[in-house]
Image 1 (tube, helix red, strand yellow):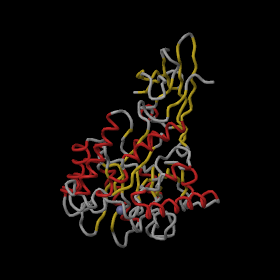
Image 2 (spheres, rainbow, N blue to C red):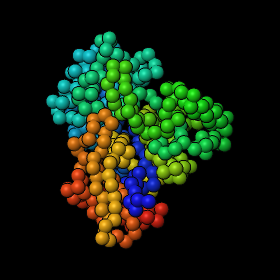
Image 3 (cartoon, rainbow, N blue to C red):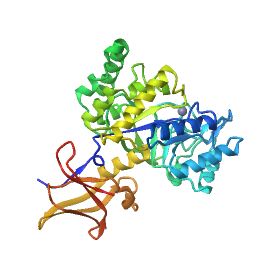
Image 4 (cartoon, rainbow, N blue to C red):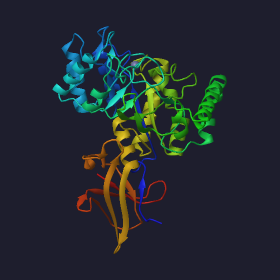
Length: 398
Ligand SMILES: [Zn+2]
């Protein structure tokens, strides 16, 4: 048995959770700043938001009539406080020329965004199972997915949701039974039954529900035009369904203590689907519950239990651990680990290995010094960790 093994998550975390909020209903820059301040300072988690390039109601967006909107979006993309396009936004008669304009503008300001998230029934969507998304149909004037690829989008979300707590781990029967909540017996029983049916359909070959069979958080997908991206799955277990429980006031249910307990128990990752701008009011009765739930989540992070990174960071880490090629051995009383590469299934061996490798953790034999190299020659900086909840020592690339 190999004395060295790869840990799924950075030390010391047992599970990971990222909050992914669509920008709908964040109409003004003041509201956007209030949400960012609330998440990043009042709660104190490393949160990244989404943005609209266009909004014909002149809501907060890149091309609004207010220069301050663009200045804020550009600055926050550069600082990592915004990391996702929420489609190209709300624009009737959207065409490829609009996509060119938006991506050119982002490039002009040196703004790199790697995540795309479909929005409602926007015609620029990439959705596969509804008719509204035309962004990957070469025969439509809205076609733009080749431009997204060239611009640097790596991850896309095309409306795939799950209500199972913890992705990236094998699906267990208990995870399905946990959907039932006696406080909301009728509604949650219905949700549980629907999910069991989706799992059954996925096992019979349904592509629409394939993510219920694999329970992965991210994996490669090919769009209609042949472009390949990584598709990710978001989580929302609201007892009335994700479409109802997607507001700030509902978020506490998605982060309730049994959910966080279950997430740690299965050792999984979840990307929570919400709209912080919908019913954003931390002092309302519902908002107060969400405030408390977010504070509990922050505590889980501070205690080294749940990693709470921005969505892009979690997705990159999941891919890096899954596609890492490495070898570990013990020689002369020392543990040696050599990383060959990250075999990115879309891009091939990644050129930015040293950046993506940060946080990667290996379990090592007790009491032995360790060294980690890249390509057998580049020494990597590591931190030695005491035993975690499994009782095993480890080293983390820093
Ligand atoms: Zn939306």
